[in-house]
Amino acid sequence: MLSEITVSPAPHISKPLSTRSVMVDVVVGLVPAVIAAGYYFRMYAFILIATCVITAAATEWLCNVIRKKPDPLESLGEFSAVVTGIILALSVPPRLPVWAAAIGSAFSIAIGKMVFGGLGANVFNPAMVGRAFLTASFGMLMTTWTVPVTVDPAMSRISAENKVDARTQATPLALSKQAIKANQKAAAYARVIAELQKEPKTDREAAAELQKTVNAYNKSKAEAERCLAGVNAHLKAAFTGEIGGCLGETSALALLIGGMYLLVKRTISFHIPLAVMLSAFAFGGVAFLINGDAYAPPVFHLCSGGLLIGAFFIATDPVTAPLSTKGMWIFGIGVGTITMLIRIVGEYPEGVMYSVLLMNAVTPLIDRFCKLVPAGGKPNV
Image (cartoon, rainbow, N blue to C red; front, side, top):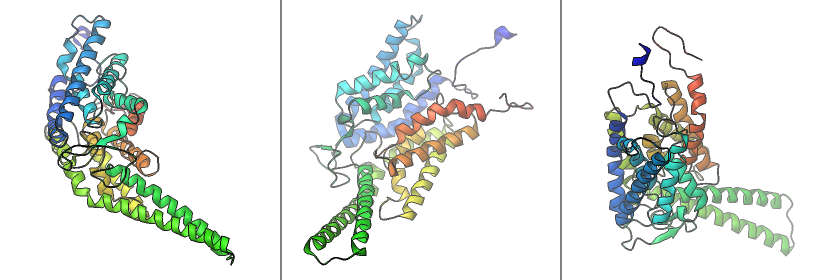
């Protein structure tokens, strides 16, 4: 009797699905984002995607050879390496050098997955491990954006320091962060002005100091207003994808189409995506209500950056996400909340990568306290 029981690592799928079919569905769900990336960034998109996919597959094959697997090519048929390669490619800037993309993809598979024992044993999402490595190792390359071809046929490069226009100079998230920082500077200058006005002085030096501080305050307020105006003016572009940013994060529409496909196919459940979006919207809404002159509206946060690709394609990874429904809610809320904490309070304009990795780390703890209860039984705590 016991000899007929098959013991296998996660993900354990109760429906009549195979790992291969699930991964193929994810690939199909990513097709709209791939098409949008190709439309806005042309050959840069397809070269990076091909590089990451080929490198991921080659690295997995090499790791299988090193581990002396009987059939090194067998695991490639599950298409998990392909999914990792595509997600990583969609998470990097369009003009990231090919060699950097190859290094990041190899790191994703070798360190993010195979070191733990392969698919089902990894603790962290492999694509986010690779992106974190690239961000830490090549910070400038990972924050150098490209103007979409529909805006600038030359597809010129722009660095994160240039914050003039949401589509041609900085990503909307960078503008949002700049608005927050400018408003904080204005608040600091306002406090200084209040202190200077408590004891008015008639000498020229004191008057000049006060006027200088007032000018700095006005300049900071004007900068905050300009950045927020740019964010609001290009909200439609953030939805369609006609902005600078990572390959697969610019078009909210394409990601929603792919996410809906996965939900209709029941490849993923709605719990994690909904929890991520609701928590992010709630956090952004509270911040906006507290100070609308500093913080972008919550809808902007849903349409910008990696929130949607994270909600539908990264956080829902069956290997690194909790198993129970309650655990999924906790996990999704954690991802959305940490993302918004980093965007609004932290120094970095984006936080999806870090929030997913942090919540991956506590997934075993969530599973421990949210045990699935067998029919007629009790949870095995």
